Length: 342
Image 1 (cartoon, rainbow, N blue to C red):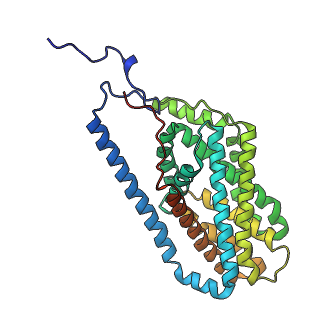
Image 2 (image 1 turned 120 degrees about the vertical axis):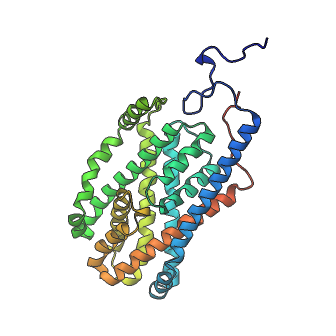
Image 3 (image 1 turned 60 degrees about the vertical axis):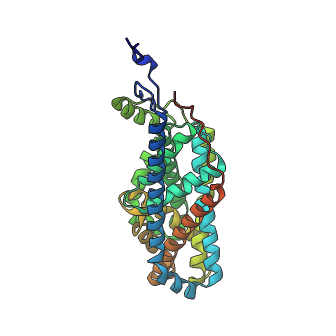
């Protein structure tokens, strides 16, 4: 008579990183290998699709790029690309600082690959792809999906809050009509400020997680970590403002107020683009805000040229950073700190 090797109660069941009860019997090595290969190939296929969509977006705007080079000049064009890349790169440091505040230590090189590759998902319809990709990647470093979701939502809320505050600070002096047209976007500011409270977002998510039978988020972001992350956001918007400034400067009267105008335009445009959730990467919405803000200073036609060129350069910066992150880590795959399956 064969002994019964199955556990008699659920106390012996394995726990996944998300706090869910596992199967009563451990997977065989062959099943784990097949599952790992399927995840690996599925992830690689999705990343290829994301790169293809972002590359196609850039290719379809090649005519505008040639026109921009002719009107703006090569040196302002290259300077704008450099500052767009720096401004985008600093958003990774904000994200990493928020993760650290929630108890997730993301290595610099491997974290940059996770962040910059996942950011290309914003060029797909909807705005959830970067968050979903980061939620799955976070499990490799022992972070639950709930913690990664909380960190991402907090990062987005912090970026939009800082961007709107910057726009409110500089646009009344450089482009007063812009706030009058987009006053409705400022209605989101009180809700964003409430979300930034250390207790608000975890409580909302824990309420939903409890209904789904998932483990709650126990970490809370400290005020010091929030301020450090906000500092990276401010610096990121300053660099993005410089990116837009180098496009506007050759087409304007080169007045000193051009930089505050560019800073306010990009800050408001990025925030409105993020709030337009169904639109991939805020295409069209973000450009319309830039045109409206800049048209009063440089005219409508030059403002349209600047908005389209900014779109092209930011897309190019996203691709450059993603490829650089992959090249930096392709010889050193990130470790898997999760304990081995029993």
